[in-house]
Length: 422
Image (cartoon, rainbow, N blue to C red; front, top):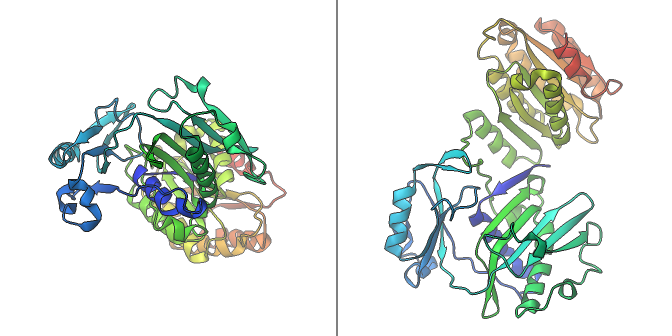
């Protein structure tokens, strides 16, 4: 599982599209948002019947790139006219800024109606090890962290959900209590069904009985990509602010989005000597930690995983992409490079099948692997693992590249120590 941030625009659209289903249509949220990307102009939307609200009232404009504290960074325009909003966007789009110590370029702006309000509520839902937790406060807004002692927390069992949990009884007395209780119940059901891992709406307000989210932050569990596809409706996962995906990372991201499997790749140090091709998200973390614990953290070249029974073709593309990066140049000091093909004991992934794709890529990169002095260490278990390890062992003999293979009798991360302490 990977928890991945989504834009505020995306979060609000998901809530507006789906909330009615989970509340018997007692709760409906506004869906008046525009996302302006580089190369687009706000003025282009004015004549579109869907966006008549642009000419009917004041507007809010803010960057939508997975960072907060926009008001404190002077990147929030409130109560603006259409002309003021267009000028603000054109003055700032493409601009390099520093937010929270991170430098990046402003590329995307969220535009929506300005909502004059006199009450601000706080609501967040997060997943925890033993339960989900709902946080609520009648005093939301930018100072919520400083006033956390006043936040109500409600534990919701993972098994059973809201059965036996009376939201309305747990809320304090306040004027919008009934509609807020309905909103929380519907939102929690949506949170679970759409695969949210974190959702914060701070603040939201209630006007004439309608809930209106003002600001939202959200993360999705990307393993729900197929299960919730019709409800997600083409969700994209932008890179964190200040980080631009490399061509290779973008390729694997695209492959991942089209697949029922999970394929992730992050380049940490393209000059590094330790490369990992790990099956499983949890295993990938353990391997990375082990490399660092052994004093090779600065040599760790990548972080990522392949899991969920990817096809041989998908594994081939993943492996080929990784090998291309790894073998582009020799280590300047003439030292060896290490490829760790590891993972836990698979439940349903056909090890031999995924190794077929890896073998194809390794065969194509035979000469480059030799030129860059690569050693390969393999540890795997699960369905058909013996056949997979046999294939890898025979491959080493034909490639002229050192390949050592280990099965489930060897501790998962032992190959890291064997490789790096050799």
